Picture 1 (cartoon, rainbow, N blue to C red):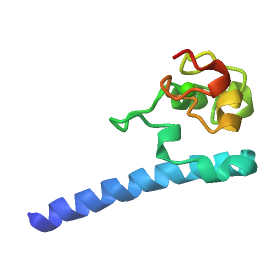
Picture 2 (tube, helix red, strand yellow):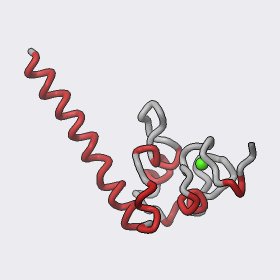
Picture 3 (cartoon, protein in one colour):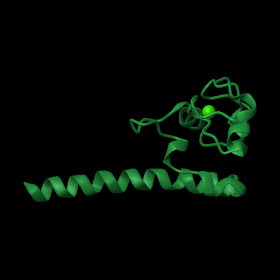
Picture 4 (cartoon, rainbow, N blue to C red):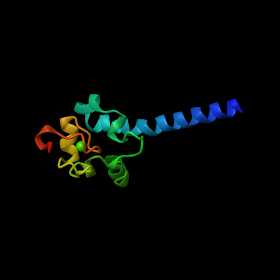
Length: 102
Ligand SMILES: [Ca+2]
């Protein structure tokens, strides 16, 4: 029974990691100047669910350019403004200083 649980756990971890890699690689290819700033929080919230940016990206078949002008998280900055500022386009608490409402 332990072997089955271990195999299932490894399979879930592996498939989850593989699911992330193409998006991370595509982001780094699309925005090479900002490749060093990307991590899992680009597309996932604290509960590891897809955030608003990821859902918009998914709706546009992973076409980053198609959602650059959107404000996925509704914080007043476009997704492209967030990417170039190094903030998170799917997290409304992460906002470029120029549009920081706090
Ligand atoms: Ca944001």
